[in-house]
Structure formats: structure tokens, C-alpha cells
Length: 121
Length: 224
Length: 195
Image 1 (cartoon, chains in turn orange, cyan, blue):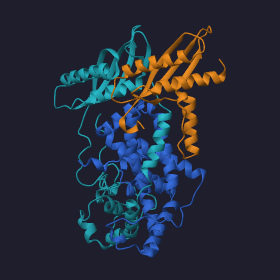
Image 2 (cartoon, one colour):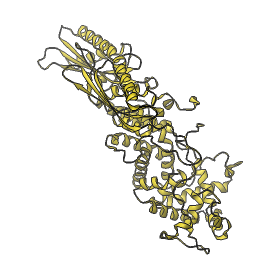
Image 3 (cartoon, rainbow over the protein chains, first blue to last red):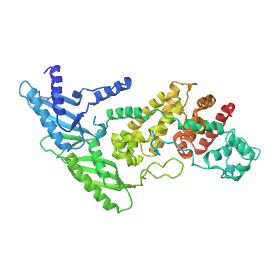
Image 4 (cartoon, rainbow over the protein chains, first blue to last red):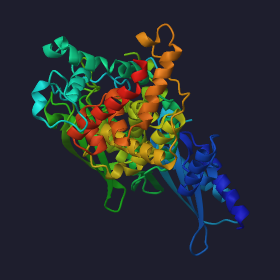
């Protein structure tokens, strides 16, 4: 898959994760977070990190299929396990149906934060 | 802000040592001078600034001491205005600080959630926060550290927590309540398979915020 | 308790009644919300301190922001040898000193502080002479050496006990009192014309 293809895959996975009830957002990975923090410092306007920054997609070492990692921030009020299961299944289904040819897809969901009511926005 | 918040309002000094004439055996400060009545200028000023007025009959009646104290009146008046000055806005500063803090989040270990078929994990720092809150729901208990470690090859997790607890009830009793609350929250709010909750009480919990009477800054910290 | 009086961040935080020491332990383990409470709890006096030391609100905000971010990064190594408040004061003072060295910005001669309500000096309105006296105090303060200025601000503006000032400035109480005396003397002389 081309680089553009991977970006599209990340977008599909991000969209699927964000539609799950109880998901408040995706946790950008370190490089994105540092870039955002630096941008905020230089420029007072709020900096938006794209949701795909919370997804990582890797080819399996032997080239047979994909491994997707989703880092998500949950909203308070539901059991983390239930939301994580739901994210796992939704992302896996969405990625499989996005691939042009059938390939195995494994998904890891990591809950990085549970946002309290006051900072869920 | 109209809030009468003891943390944010500087109070006039009302504590610390109050060296009066009894401290005359301490060597004088560089540049100090003795007033015609024999008192050191530095001590007269300290006494005037630190102690309640009119506690020393000498200062009240001595014209030299009184003059020395009055010499600070202008500085004191300008200082009062400086003290009452509105500091720059905390809101914006706090917002920027927390933005950086959230960008530098410390996740800790990644722990398995209780699902044998899927690869689901939760950051230790996030799970610990939820479990501390569960501990805090027990009256007279406040969690301090909370560490979680995976146990065995499955999704079992062991919790180690330290507590500050009020001393009005037996500690084992309270620790038991906290353990129950933590177990319940681990299953109900997180979905973690917690096998054990080790609890150590490390400090006595005093009422917070501390009740302050009269002038002086509040004492911070409630545990030892 | 009048809950509406709290700013939103503090009002909703369940950690509001938790002592500093516990919050610091939690923050060291990565609990951002506990750290947010510490920022709310100690930010204002630190901003006032930084403003006194640096002479303007913009630099004060920058110094306090850097101090808190530095504290967050160093919390895992903070061994509670000092109270959180004292530790924060020390970090903020050091940050202010670094900023002053980097760009020695003299206090603006036009610095005019807002009058305090209910103060005899500000009723009904402060005269030009009083404004001049406060500007003179700010200038005299800026002319003090760092050690004296820090001790004077921590004592006379912030109301810290000698013990804490000694802790913040890493010196003895006796040295703190000596610096206070010399600071008072210099300020009194500088304010002479306004007596």
C-alpha cells in the first residue's frame, strides 16, 4: 500500500474509533504532542492535532496483514473495558472492509486517559 | 476574584520570631545602629513589623523607638498597595501549564484489561487515578501512591496503595473499606482483573483545608 | 460553602480537599488533575511574587508558567524534603533570577498599581503624589540586590515565616533577618522624599 493509502487507512481507523460512544478523543503520539505544544507556545491560537495522530498502522513483519494501534481518551461514566472492546471491534471491521484485498488485521486498543467532565471538550 | 481563599490572599506577617530586647545578645547585623535609648534599629523594626502593636511598653513610650518605627510608615503604606495589587491572570497561565503537562503525559505501565480475546490495555496512571478516587470516597481516607503491576501471564493485576487516614476510627477497618471500594471500582469502572489490593496507611489525615484563626498564612500539608 | 465562587477548574475537581503533599505524590505518578489543583492553589501568590521581582505581568506569567512546567517534570524526583509550597517558591525565585540576568529589564517608571479598596491611601482616589511614591518604592526595590529583594518581597508582600524564607533562599534565618534589615533601610532612604 502506498503512503497515501496508509494515511487513508489511519483516517478510516480514527473515524471508526471516534464514533464509539464513550470515546472523547484520540491521544496523539509523542511527536505530535510535542509539535502541538511547541506550536501553542509560539502561536496563541489553538493548535489542532489531526485525529489520525492517535493511530498507528504497521505492516506485519512477514508482510501478511496489518497491525493497528489505537490510543484513546475516554469520557467518564462508562466502563473502560466495554468501550475498549467496542473500539477494537469497530476499528477492525472498518479497516478490513477498507482493504482492497482480504488481509489479516490485528488491533490493540490502549486507554491513555479518562477525561473528567470539565476537560472532555 | 471575590473568593475568600486562604491560599491566595497574602496576610500581614504575624509569625516568626519576635526578637525584642531579649535578643540583644545576638550580634548586630552589618550596618545596624544603636538608637540613643540603646535599642538596635534592626530589632526595633523587626518588632514593629512582626509583632502586634503596643506589646512592648518601652517602644510605646520611647520617643527614639517611636521615631524609628514611624520612619517606615511611608514604605509600609506603599507596601500595602503593592500587596493588594491584582496579580496577573492565573487563568491563562494555568491553561498553558496544563496544556504542556497534558502533552507530556506520564502513562506508566500499560496494563491488560480483563479480556482474553482482544488486546486491550489501559495506562497505569489513568487506572491509578480512578482507583484513588474510589479510595477517596471512603470518609476519612485519601489515597497517596497507587501502583499497578501485571501478575502472571493473563490479565491479572495487583494494586499497591498508600493512604492517609483520619484517626477517629480503627485503621484496619478503614483500610478494609478502601480495599472494597477499590475492588469494586476496578471491576465496575475499569474492567481490570484485580487479584489483590495491598494497602499501607502512611499518614494521619488532618482536616483540610486547615482552619486558620487570625492572621498568618495557613499551614500547608496535612500528613507526615 | 459557596461553590460558585471557585473557578471552574477547581470547582469540579474531586481533589480539591486533598492536602498538598498527597496531590504532589499523585502528580508525580502522572495524575495531571492533581497537578492542576496545585497550580490553582499556589498560582496566585507565585504570580504576585514574580511580578514584584520582574516588574511586569507578562514576564511574571512567563516565569510562573516555566516554574510550574519545571515542577511537573521534576516531581518524580521531588522527595518531599520541603513542603510543595516552599519548593514552588524556590523554583519560581530561581526562574525569576534567571530571567532578570538574561534581560535585565528595569522597572517601568510608569508602572502604576491598581489601588486597593478600603485602604486609606486609596480613598477616594490616589493622588499623583501617592502614585509617585509607589513608583519610587518599585524603583527602590529594583535597585536592591537580589538576596535582599527576595527576602523583602517574601516577608513583607507574601507574609512567609522566616523559616520558609530561609528555606526558599537556602540560607539561615539570621541571614534572612539581616537582609531584611538592610532592605528596609535602603527602601526607607529611597522613600525619604515622600515622608
